[in-house]
Length: 135
Image (cartoon, rainbow, N blue to C red; front, side, top):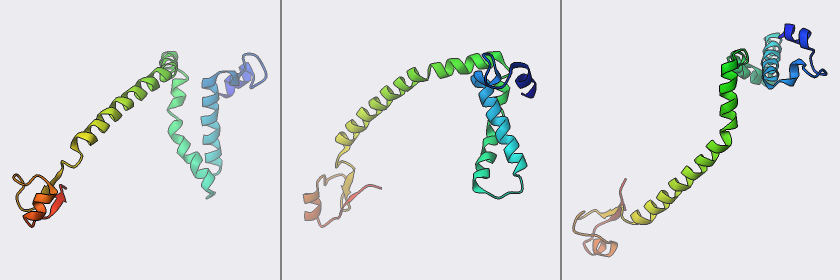
């Protein structure tokens, strides 16, 4: 990272280090790791968040592989379409959930006296049973 910063510049130039998104991610991961290392003995809750950012370290290897960069960029470009498909699937699930609630409304109850012969609440009370819902 330091060699790239020396070679390309840090911010202001046209092809500087922080103009590319992968380099921004790499810089963020390295700087958060350095801050975490320097604040090792300090017990501040904000520093604990930096320790959680250690899980981002494997993403640094993605910035070194051009085929992985291409794969992740294609995945990010298709996120809108994936979200649209997800919305359609949720709507279909909701339709079946509404249908199931309407079809099974009140059908999952029984009488404690005779499960198969008594089908409604009034007959159950006449037979001195308890009308209850299945577990």
